[in-house]
Image 1 (cartoon, each protein chain N blue to C red):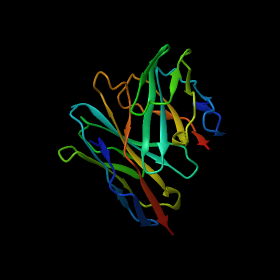
Image 2: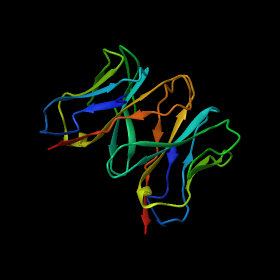
Image 3: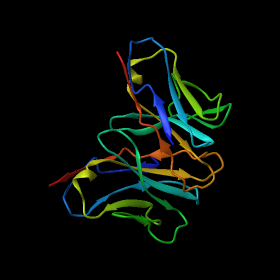
Image 4: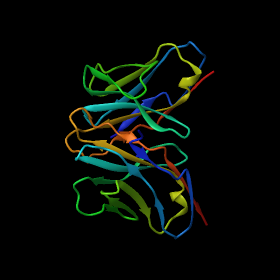
Length: 117
Length: 114
């Protein structure tokens, strides 16, 4: 079974508008972390935001926020005031804290975001 | 600090040839990883290492071997390249002190096997 699911292969948004990228996950580990990475066309992986399973508040980093709904096992990324430079592939990833996880990340398939002027 | 570096950046191989990808990190991280990225598949873990002299298999280890003789270096080897190994390869490192710590990625190696 897929541990991380991103159901939106592609998303379009108008510049300056907000956009939500969906991510659902599956784990039986009570302690885990959720990450979002951005991959622009140049190919590098850029860390955006982190949410811990025990964090009481949703994570925020500048224009990025994570809408964490633990009961639904979803960790959606919200980008406010989209910019042309936000056009990229976005990956959701999970790290379980269990003894044999060794910090490994499990990635979703990614969502390509295109920001229109 | 250079962070995580990968050598080479691009390579074209013929089927059956061998090569080694080198990953180096200067952050004294304990854990290192090799991923491959195929279109529509996200990143998948090939092998990983939790310390010098130790390696373990990830999700897609077949056709690859790894070694970590020094803490800062993690090598990925292809003994007999196949077209199915055409992919972008990313190395990453991680400090295990906090669950929240991000994995730092290298710039990637684009490998084509003809």
